[in-house]
Length: 477
Image (cartoon, rainbow, N blue to C red; front, side, top):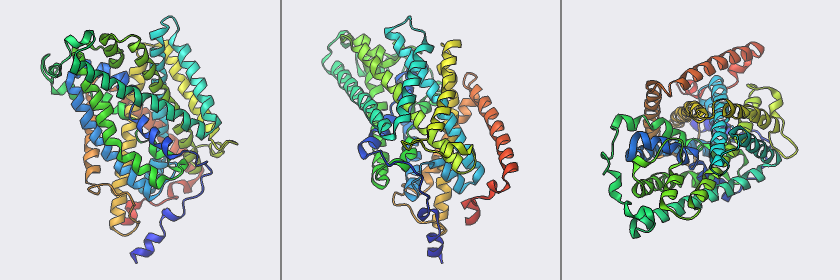
């Protein structure tokens, strides 16, 4: 009897989405790697070092472990049913249509505001070379160029993202090697003060207290936004059954090397008290090491990181809008693919909203980055919670015999998903406690109210929309 139930699942009847499976293994791998290296590390770490000192390393390690739990949960769902709608589609299946609708639109919001943050960061980096150029001008130029890339084809997107990620990875490894060289051989002007003891010599490992360290978790979680982008590529990957598990399983060493390792080396080379908010600690460290043109090279690298993330944002928002349209939760016009098999209208509308970031850089250039990162983090936490809850319900359905087991099961079943859920709720509480970041919860409350009104309108126009898929947890009981 159970086997009959399994045969009827969505695994075997996923509709053809019409996308071109143009993302090869090397591109998916580098998209996954690039997703773990972004502006949150390159720029946001400066402010967090000033708040927490060397203990920021521990916060990145702790959050990195939670991110791995989230990605293994997502990986199990992706190999159960690889679709481009990814977590929105799983929310729809396991929690009901409203949650799929809410998650899809919220993930779209996350990437729109993340795109604003990346444009802001890119403009800050260009000011390093051209301080007289207004930030809004630079942000607008980058927005238009990346928009063109995303309209042409998914292959061009994947190729550009591959090289963006290659630059970031190569540069970070180079930074670590040079930093270790300074520590070991003492060369450069920084060699006289570089020492492992810098991690505790200036008021200890927790110089501002454990509480201040925990308060950096909001910024740390923002740094990890985009690791879930691998899930959105599922519908356009050449061989998702092989490429996705490989991309997810390499996450721990990427976190250990690029986040924990890089920060540890930098904070050994330069004492934490010399870093300041608004300045990339990587640029600052290389300026102090005194390598000719080193700071400029690092500034170029962090610029590519910002552009990479914005490029990914345009990619994902267009796909998410199309998934929502396929479910009747967004205008039907978003379903149409262009001649190059890209969701051109969805990308265009998303870019227009990202243009708000250009306006923010014109009105409040000094505060634009902080405003948009807090909203993006809140939206990201919602997305991760939906992945985890969907995974818990999926595992329950598998045990009950309603659904087949995935070929890529998460270790420990759903136990680590519960750990990650508790952690994300704790971070949400920290956001609510902090007066500076609390504003994002007000924004999210307004966003939820707007989506609630939209859902009511959709149900009034099409009463069947709320009953198109029975939530799996109701079937399981």
